[in-house]
Amino acid sequence: MDREQITVEEEYEGSRLDIFLATVMAERFSRSQIKKLIEEGRVQVQGREVSPHYKVKIADQVEVSWDLKPDMTARAEDIPVEIVYEDEELIVVNKPAGMVVHPAHGNLEHTLVNALLFHAHGLARCANPMRPGIVHRLDKDTSGIMVVAKNDRAHRFLARQFKDHSIDRVYQAIVRGTVQHEEGICEEPVGRAFLNRKKVIVKPSGGKDAATLFKVLKRYDRATLLEVYPKTGRTHQIRVHMSYLGHPVLGDILYGVASPWINRQALHARALGFRHPTTHERLYFESDLPADMRNLLTRLESLKE
Image 1: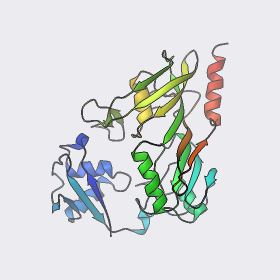
Image 2: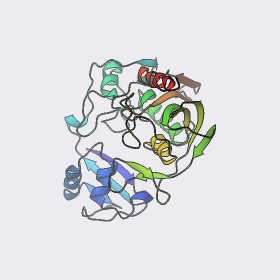
Image 3: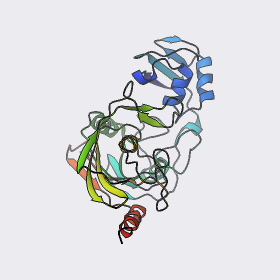
């Protein structure tokens, strides 16, 4: 038997219990599975069973329990992955665009976790068994540096750094249009869209605090290369904030527009810095822009000719 306790945050107040859980546990269960768990009495709110129609309140404690089945545990697969650094505590990888970070409902194979389980023969298990070792994530079509924990102690230590925002994160993004200011910041709260739960929007009321700093590296006739420093780690944060500012990431069809020169969002996690779980030494890892983003910059440069 496995279980998870979830605290209802402000943005979900008033949502039906089944819809709330289907949103926050979307990577683990379908909505029909959530409804079945509620009907079987495997979901309690504030220590009591309720119906799927129950409207959740801020700070409600929702506990979900379920039987862990074999197909709910990530499996090792022999998939090549670029290891930047590895020791007994952690692995730093350079994730390619197009690779999902961990298995989820409807997508159980060919992920980064599957590859690392084969490579390392074991990752931290203190989190969701479908995402062992995962402390943070990159979107499927975002490339770049990630750190993964090999044991539970390392996972807890790294997770605390992400929670208190002491991690150094640097991204590079190619955005539409000419960014006028040399540097700037967007601090608009963000949250899930009501009608499309896969999409995140700026939510001045009820959203989660978010802060994204950026500076211009180079301007082109129709685009700008930015270095971006997210101070919080909200889902799709950089993509949503840049779109809100009128400069969506090129190739981002969810928050901006497609590009004829790149088939994914032009966003790369260039660097990551954190303290080591054992030595407490400050580590810092970098990754060069991948070929598709370099090609995009070459194309943009040619527009000046």
